[in-house]
Length: 625
Image (cartoon, rainbow, N blue to C red):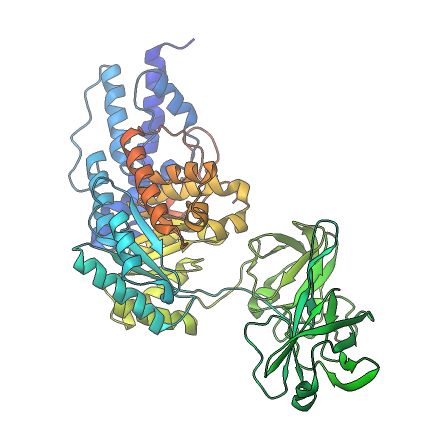
């Protein structure tokens, strides 16, 4: 068994080689560092140090250090070089060697400087630190009609620090109302509430290939044994008059015929299934007649109704106007269907397979055989099984039910496919112009590459929005893989933050990998001293129903590791804020610093960071996402 001195010498050699690599990387990455804003110089250097360090498996070194009472390097994200230098100094002490020369000032941050940088960058973006805690709380605004002074006052009183306006919903007039109400109430209460406007981003959606079927189902209420407990109420109104808004089932009849219908008259028809149905008029007003239907009927525009009084026929009339049902494509595991860019050609000659459209042509053309295509927040999983004349043929690999009915306007995710998309479309431009004028920061949706960041920054420069904060939403697999390069490009501007959009990200990478990926994002952003927003479904059940689940309370407790936590809207949102603030305060008071064991990161890193040779004889290649 090796002696402690032998182990200390080996550890010092291992860490010394790693420390030398940091200096080498700093030289090779000089062009990247020069391009970074002055406020981020030290942070960018530390980010590179962290990425170099995480290219190797440090777990054997960490365990040896920990067993001998030395720092296990488990919390080095914010001050990599300083942490390594401190361990080297302790190893030198153990080997009775002189300490290394004093660290030059202003090069890489110490532990204290790392804490100060992260806190400063956080407060510059999110506002003054909340009283009694470090973690901020953001709330998503509901529809403008629900935002009044009482709503804002309740949130401010409970501890809200930021309000998010979703640029994918409503318009500028509604956004203006929300922001003005927030500003007015915050000013009256002498509170600082900052506003984030989220850009819609290029949302990939399903498109109906044709209108939905025009059919209404008239259905009486039944008990568990199928017995009618309340008949279906049907209203007859005069042609040319407005359909009665309070009546779910209504048919327009000729005004002259309606005027002759009396109590006890019968109205019969044959429904879409060929079933004979009838109802008896049981109520009359000056303008309407009402009857009770005791059997389920499927009514289509072609259905013809006949009014009778005993054996005398009063008249016939077509149903005519029938509400259009949403388009639904029923599919099961193993089924195949076409995905085509809009406009789609449903039932075109030579196509036996059903079809649904895609709002982005570039997505369809980029799909390759075997690539996954996910629909409706990942509920339906398909793979590309072939090509059609205008698109691709998909095969259903997983469905949440025996028959899944895929509708229009549902999200599409293509985690295995790279495609070009304009991240600043017309809707984004409208929301961005509003954010420049009225908000404190803008949320950049669907960021996938460094080029997306540069395009956004160029547009902000054109709009003279030098002081507008930027929050990068990490919601796709490509954004996660390229996060280090995205952060370095984003650091050309100050201040910035990162939002972990956990819902979309989970759909892209799989829910089983979400915990791992969000951990890596937190690590990398801490290394860059960039504040993180923990988002998606935090205390969602509590906000919507007033009751929290054990799982979401645990999730809220884990969110203390981020700098900000975002809650969604709901009728009980004020109670959700109260609960979240209480959880955050308790967790900040009782949670001790965790010790992490560092395997290699699964991220792509800039070329200047790739080590020329591994520390412990292991390949520095990152793991696949």
